[in-house]
Length: 430
Image (cartoon, rainbow, N blue to C red):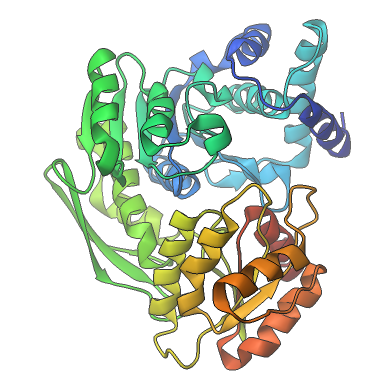
């Protein structure tokens, strides 16, 4: 199977939607020889921040000499972004091998598996083939029925809880937390990020039921503070983390301050696996080398274009703080080029960003799930009282955002699909 054939196979499986069951992924894994049992697993869920935490945990463990993989979703440009081994994306050839192995088993079982079931099975198989000793797996959605929940994680991480995917996970944060809590399995260590505080009792009850030890971040076991935050696009933030009695000192990351809780949560998760073997300098160096594609990522400089995949009001509020910090001159703020999916809380996103941007340019990604640019412009006008340009063609929308933003430039946001297409346009392929 060639890479293009693998992508077509996954695209075809999208027609099967989402299955609220683990039967499909369990059958696929069984047919592949249960590869997930051959390495230690860390599973990461949460409404926001889970991709960053997944990649940070993997980077820390890899820097300590453990052959570590990261499995994340969704991708921005290519499917190969979803699977990294020791910080390097798998090749298109290896990716296709994994999808082929999963597809062969699926056909033998009668087919009907979803895109994410096939993709997860392919990844788990490929990680065994690549000799991985630790796999850090980002949950696609929720926790109870997510395909990554075929594993029994040694460490189960929850970054935080907000209202997202309410059509599938529940209409309240309590219902969403109860779904995500299912990644905590018997014998796991549950690492609870600061964003879990309002519903922490739900996770603690699940942990008690599963005889899982709990590590809390932001209070109790792990403390962090922001010593310096990025005051320009592409700037650094300095965080101090004290995790279970170990002082990790000043940790520098090229990211806004919103990554600080993610840094602390990632350190706590890595420490839960490594114990006393975790080394302060190794951890700091690993985090200092990290990049965060599509997360306040500076792609052009004069004028700047920043990409951030904030796709719900909670993430947009966090992004708004980062914008205010990176553009401290209120008279010289960027223009937001936004493209939002039709099933998201577009009004909440716009209300969060409106106070910190010069204005908006409305666009749409190529996915059928995207809200039309004109419809989004209608919404922005209702919220702000000003009619923004509606430019469906993303390259032109980005250029218009840079023109209107003048020296302050533009920030492209609202959806990972929008950010992914912008990134394909702005970041050269290596």
